[in-house]
Length: 357
Image 1 (cartoon, one colour):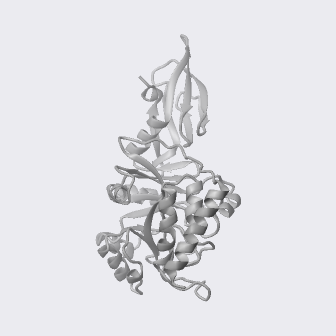
Image 2 (cartoon, one colour; image 1 turned 180 degrees about the vertical axis):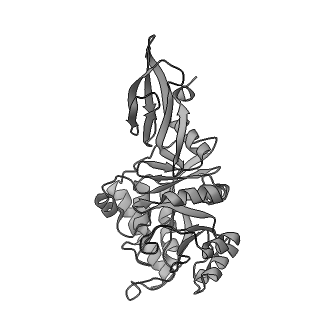
Image 3 (tube, one colour; image 1 turned 60 degrees about the vertical axis):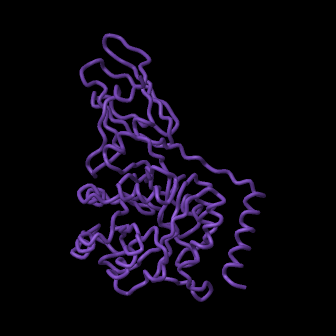
């Protein structure tokens, strides 16, 4: 039985199981900004076709249930430990997943992971035509082939302890690749960690920011073990809900990394997300104090620190808080400590800018 026939049978089986099981999708509430669609994405994940533990269809099902809009399966080219039982076929994960992804309304980006020792490390090539030609012992030739196919290339987990025990390092090899435009983005967050230095690199070198899961195990295992209810997510602010729209947004640097309570992005993007998510109104006022109601319409979390010596207020997703501030100049100035555009630069604003007219 050929691969296409196997895939067709699996697609029908998967769709039948989904219909019978009546799966529930958790819709993540993140606002659109500036006329762009906000897409929830994960561009780094693995299956049994490299060193992952699950079939490609599982990655589609997990992503749909978790409210994602777009994914990329990025199995390793160089590392295929299941090859005794699963044939080495670098095109198979995309071919298997694309039918179910289309049925589920998910955008599936074709990708692969170029897996080298440090330097330079691991890189994801997205929007490729064929994965197999990218496989090359020479990392520069591999990246050049990906670039020739029109790939958007991401430097993965620069601070991964297995390759960077002393933390992320921008080496001569990375500068050479950067000069040749052989990568365009970088993972500020990966799996269960984030890298402050890398956020600064992204700002200084105008690299597009990513937060990806790099998931190998079933996602349910990850969520349980890490005691979290959400994988790392990349928010993409796209003109259209299409692969081309996503690629254009990446090339323009319109992304944000959403990792645990943190958001990483350009300052203007973070400010706009805050404005679209939060609504502020005055509930009481007198000569000494003003009381504000701060309502969060999104699933994002905001860690608010008030400069008027009022301490911190945590504003979870889909919640409201009341805060009373002294009626003085700049009394409503607030630092949003978990919205970072550099490692030591959180967003600062005033409550009056968040009031709706």
